[in-house]
Image (tube, rainbow, N blue to C red; front, top):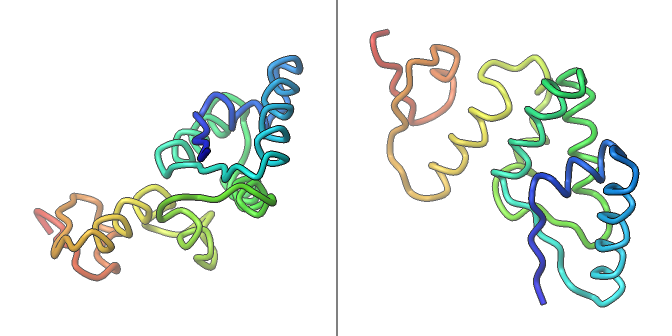
Length: 134
């Protein structure tokens, strides 16, 4: 069985709060991993977690990115999209364009999209981007 985790589970695993839900999430992941089931996490979930950690927990971009990297390096857990590669971007915490815009761009590139239209001027440094109104 392949398991996909929702944002609520990932946030509990990474934050440890509330404790009873974090422990339930941990038990579930350990049971699935012990059963040999692959555990996948989508780019949507990782992007939501990125924002939740900053806006609800007051974490810095760097701490949030470090937490995502650590989580995705956990045995049995795998990202199923662009996030693992984007997390390898040097200086990502202060990079322009930022984490989520880079994930969107990478998704389009992998999907064969020829051009990404945006008003985000910083995205001009990425290939295949048309900054509107520039």
